[in-house]
Structures are given as structure tokens and as C-alpha cells.
Length: 110
Image (cartoon, rainbow, N blue to C red; front, side, top):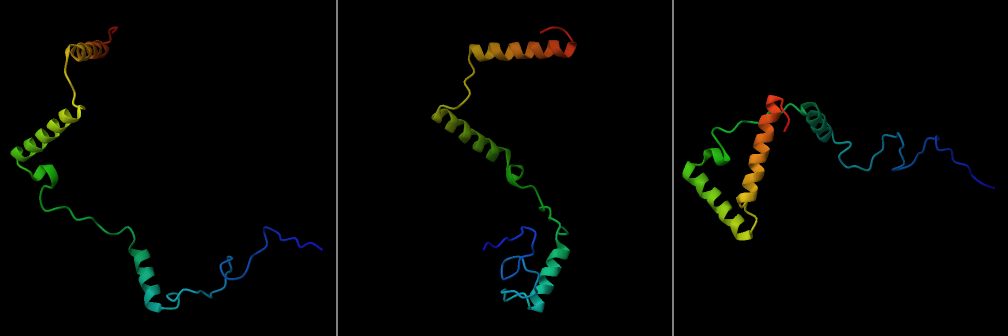
């Protein structure tokens, strides 16, 4: 004897998708918790972000402070060997790109 269970048959029992109102949650019957969840759902998306009173980050720094930070970054890049090195070949490549862009804007062949 075999039992056939239809995949479309409603399932019942705890944790099996039953529609009963019983729950194991201690907060389910608490009216304060229910009211709080409803209020949170109602207010979702209504909060506004406050703008800062003044500039933040690099905008709040003096030019000297920004220059010092940039200088540290440049020194560190050179120390690691990842800094850009401008040599004759990179200069030729940059000039070639510049001329090609100028010609493309004028409609001529590059």
C-alpha cells in the first residue's frame, strides 16, 4: 500500500504553512509588540536624513591639510612602486590620444 501526497494539497502542522492563528512566538499575542510592528510598517520610508550643519570630509579641511594628505599618498605610491611615471613613451601616447580626439571632434580621420 502506497500513500500519494499531492503537491497541491494544503499542509498543516507547526511550521508547515498552516493557516492557524497559533504561534510559538511570545510576542505574537502582545498588543504592544503588535502595535509597534504596525507603526514601524506604517512609518517605513518616511524618515528624512538630516543634512550636516557644515562641510564634512575634505571640504571641511584647510587647503594645507588637503595638500598634506595628498602628499602622503604620493609618497606612499612611490614607496610601493605604484606611482605613475611620466616618461617619453607615456608623453607620446598622451599626445597621440589628444590629436586623435581633436580630429574626431572636427570630423576628420584620426
